Image (cartoon, rainbow, N blue to C red; front, top):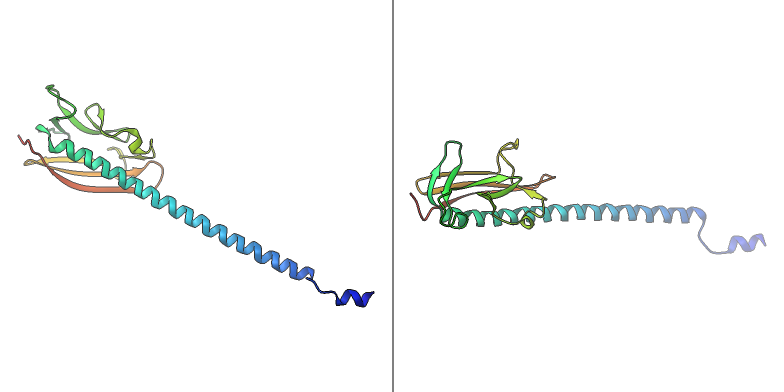
Length: 170
């Protein structure tokens, strides 16, 4: 009977343990690779969303400044003007500003909350340590704008500088 047991074919305990260890290592490598791929996907998606918001804000701001009337630069680096969209025929002036991480023209939000992905992205205000997210200067019929969008909780950001010619200069 002992001879018959020695002749039987099969895996030994050591061979089985080696196979299990190899499968565990392969599983760990696949898990690590998938985690890195998902993190990379999230970062690329976040950067793309920040750039899309920046583009949307740039379009809205460009349209507003292009048709501004009676532009009056103020001493505190702000600019007041009559807006074709937000003042109508009133004599009140509109001022472009950042409040709660969103872009406003007067009391009106220029793009809806959904464009900011409901708080996931914002425009830094003047108290931000890296500087304000919006600066607007007006000289000789030209608006020079610097605009930056950041992820509210993260390191993703996008920024641009552009110039807009005012069609209704003083």
